[in-house]
Amino acid sequence: MGELTDKIKGVSNEIAGKVKQAVGDATDRPDVQAEGSAQELKGEGQNLKGSVKGALGDKI
Image 1 (cartoon, rainbow, N blue to C red):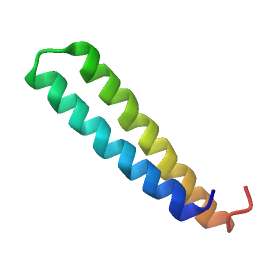
Image 2: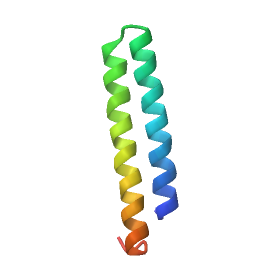
Image 3: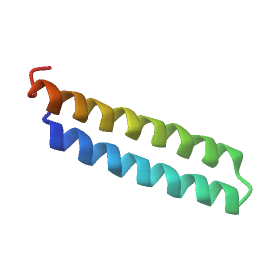
């Protein structure tokens, strides 16, 4: 996958994670909130991976 693909997936996961966290807060569901937090972290990692690929020219 290229830099842009990783960044798009990362942003998508970050947004979905934030939405899940908000739903978990609103419905008093700590399991959903934790799932959202994990998904947001996954998105941050994907975004970072895309940035690294961009800096290295997609050679990883």
